[in-house]
Image (cartoon, rainbow, N blue to C red; front, top):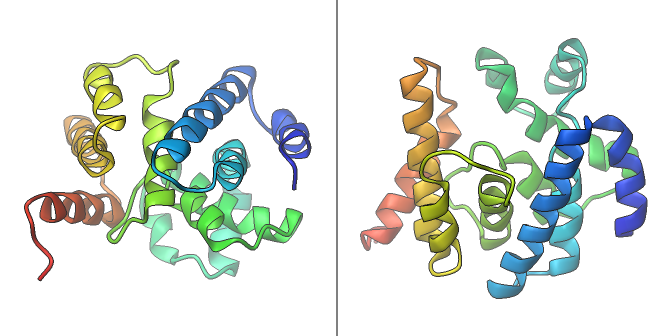
Length: 191
């Protein structure tokens, strides 16, 4: 699918603010993809679709989670973590996007995971640092994003977990696995 077609499909599914965010994520993701030597064309498509399912009715998202290969334990956590996994299923079923890198980047863009690949990390990071984001700590992550991808992703995982803890919110296990993965990797782990 070409970029223009993807934008035409995604725009009506999002609010104006979320669509603008999506375009900024795509622009940021392409810059990072170029820097970290992954496909900019595939990355742009993943970024355009990353929030595609965000405003789907909760009942519809539940049904997709239950009836697909997605883990049902997603339903035990806040619905904010559902839209990435649901979108990874929907893009395959509706648009024939079978590319595993694209689907995984969309699926894990809110949580991260262990053994995070470079392609997935780029979207995870771009979603966090796109220029419209303004919250404490984002500038440090932006600067690190162009120096060290793993370290920047560790900062995103750390900040996200810290934010959820401050809200007394549950934390999906993939987020914790991502934090442990990056910390261990940066400390020379993984024998």
